[in-house]
Image 1 (cartoon, rainbow, N blue to C red):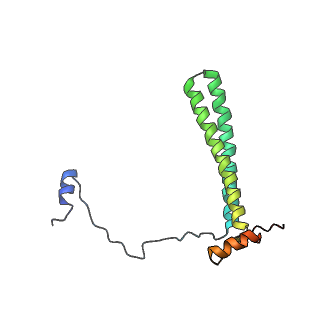
Image 2: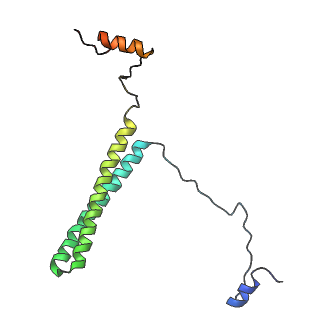
Length: 138
């Protein structure tokens, strides 16, 4: 029987068989997602602390190696690692700021200082001459 994979089978010198799979054979597990931002925050914060700690250990090690060898590439790697740890600490601060923004109640401006004059230019110039718009007492 000639199937669409016959050329491939012939060139690789193999035989293939088509396996049918029923829906019962497929086991799909659902992943629970958390709608709890506090839990996610605590998890992310813990992960960032762990990364910073491991990064600091790596920085100490690479600096020791760089100083012993004096090789410029070792110092370059140390500089990149230091930058990476610094970026991770910035992410930790950003995470805290984002969490505070989530916790803060959303509110609009408390004071609105928009004034609107409805009238003609003649009325406006008359009010200005009288000093009513400037709120100055003469």
